[in-house]
Image 1 (cartoon, rainbow, N blue to C red):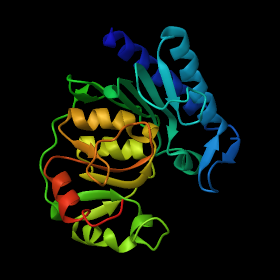
Image 2 (tube, rainbow, N blue to C red):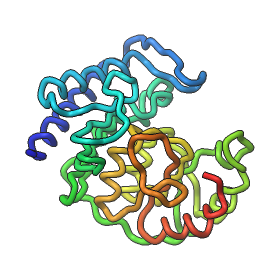
Image 3 (cartoon, rainbow, N blue to C red):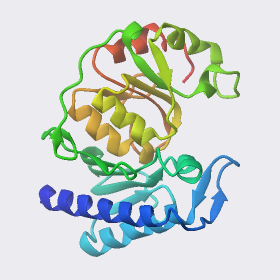
Image 4 (cartoon, one colour):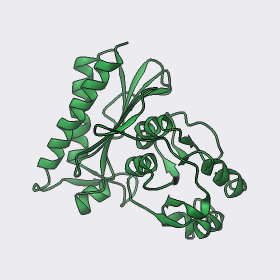
Length: 265
């Protein structure tokens, strides 16, 4: 398999898609809701996914596609080569802010992440990694993640999970939020994962993410020595929705065993 060629095409297409999205900023969006009133999708999400699907189908007809907006294949496993696409991760930010969103594109072979690309469209920052070859921000090589303790860590955590909610006991994560140096929430899993990769934050926790939210970021974070599991410490399968804990070494184990072990995740 010529992974160099796949990587070159993926980078070309993600930049082209970014140009298309930037050109939409002064146009009226067609905004719809999906699972709830805050789960937004726009015509730009849908058109961007269809753009990728057309390119992949024409260039790599034997590859499968898993996309957030449902225009790809219905997959129950990751046999063969699978492209996992989130055309706009952070749609609410895209709609309200026209920033703090990204295109996320992961390419997997037999369930193993081979290529991860996350494009911060507004800042023209392309985070990218190929398995075994390091991770980069544009052309700058990123350095491996260092160990951190909880009390010197910035942790990305949605405030929903430390407020009373119907999914978990909100008291479970309060000690972690209290002991950390600080908490942040950016509204885009893809960006939060590359912020872990660059050390802008030290860990990212979420209770409910789909494969397209994390597939590309997982390749990038793991290439830098980071660890990605669900909140039970299990490997993600990139087929089903799951919880997420992503961080550098050391910190991952501390959070998992000292703060999460009693949770029903």
